[in-house]
Image (cartoon, rainbow, N blue to C red; front, side, top):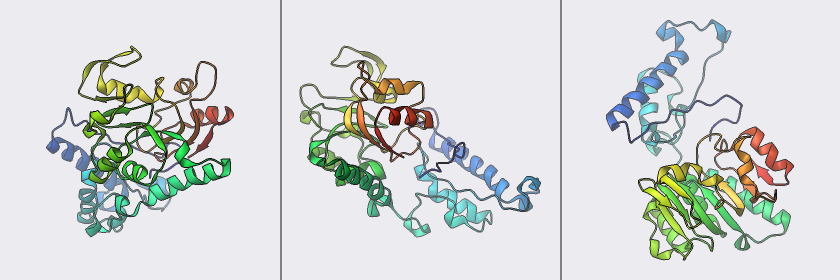
Length: 290
């Protein structure tokens, strides 16, 4: 998980539509080498007086299109002589000391415990609530969230598109995708109800059941959490862009009546909401856990 300290994160995102695998690798290695220069100032002969004798210690985790570079990052640190190279990246393979979330479910276990304990405090049964989820069955957290939860999931948004059904998505089909670590684009459409839909990012000129029109599926994916469809008892962001909901856009998480669209929010992706957005939701009575 990323640090929760304000302004302490640095995200590098690679757009697979515009960069070849070789270009992505080159971008990653140059970026990491630059930061290793800062972490190894004596080796590189760069200024480090501002550190007051303290060492610059950083670590890196996977984000969009960088998950496959975590082994490379650790190995690059080793080559450069960084003494803590095994701790340089998260999400790396077991052979380099990584602990796979999809096997042990550490993050999921802690995130989902907030859900179950909150429901117990409120006297509610998990099987009776609806859930909206970002981060899909292909991810560590998203797949485990599907496998351990017992709710009625009405929507899942991941990198491949938007999956929605107001009566609840077919649980067995979601489990199939989660076990295969497949994205929502692989969901079998025949399992959708009459008001359900699957929109892939490559689709164009999309019209939803409410008549709203979207130029592309990618545009819908990026904004779906702010649409009228994004409402449920519980919202669990298991992935998404930092500050996907801001102080300005948080108004979209309220009905016209002023009632919040979600009663409970448990952040697995702990940068999904800005601090200001969280404050607005909490003031409106939403149970928010970061």
